[in-house]
Image 1 (cartoon, rainbow, N blue to C red):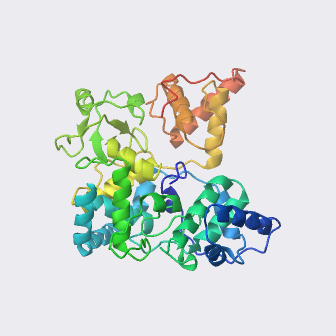
Image 2: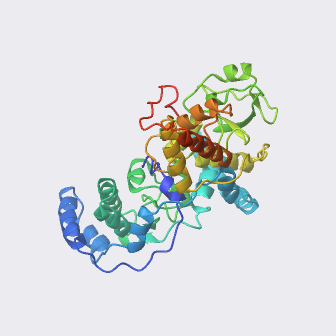
Image 3: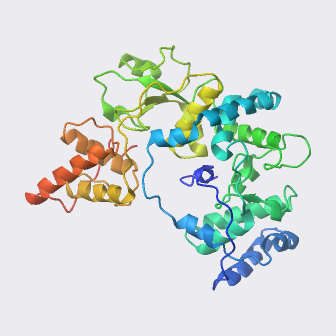
Length: 421
């Protein structure tokens, strides 16, 4: 499974119809010949290599998707609103009823609630309706040849061919997302080989055609990743007026009783859940938006997909599928920054002496810590969130510093506290 790429995170990228193959490009045939030799040395049969890769050519659309960059960041409210629609929730409720016996069996075996399994299913493939139409061996060969992440994708291609070799799926029927995620739950080939199981007892693992195989495999993965039975993923909370916003970060963990002592309360007024480990507070849309307490199972979901928005969406969809309420808080400050705006903000923070790292347009821990320190210097809530109003303040302060000749060319390194997410 991937990290950053996420465990299964690539499945969240748009699933697009496979374009016609690009014209043959110099170097691919030579790469493919070398790869065949490597694959045969690793035990892949010639028959599987012939079936999967004979006549293969790089797919231009796969390369384009791998190289694309988003134009704008996506706010949590936008992300959640596009995934937790009334139709999505109604369909999930129907799937819970239709597959009740199967889901009960998976829950009993793995400890993963059926509402959580169906939430993953809904977010990954809209309950199996959008599993992707790219041929996996050809897409992975394209990405392995392209070279940007060749080692990773070549290893995924080897695993995909091993799945074909084992008789689980024919090479021509092995379809999925452009980056190799497959089936109802969008497993990468390495994840398939490590965690996929035969859930329907037919001695074959079919993550495309067998919902039983897909659900048992998902439950098996989550259990192996450390799922804690009976514990939640996340809980919406109300924060006290005097809350120190710098404490709202994934790396800052405390026992629930300690958060309670600070005045943090469940948003719906319910008792605190019984959990084993410490918890963190996250603010996916800044201090004015919803606040969540997240637990050990949040980390498990993040192993599947390293996106806070995704993990919170799993939690919220599962909660509503289980009969719980929607979010109580409003979205917070609206408006998404563009990639260019984030890059400009990072450069300006650096020149103001707040080390945001490389101006890459990514809001990582280093940029968040720089934002927090800037916000503290300005008397703003130090939530580390790149709201449009914060960008405007950075631009104003930067312009004033430039006019006064006070810009820095060598920003200080972040402290250990501030460098954590």
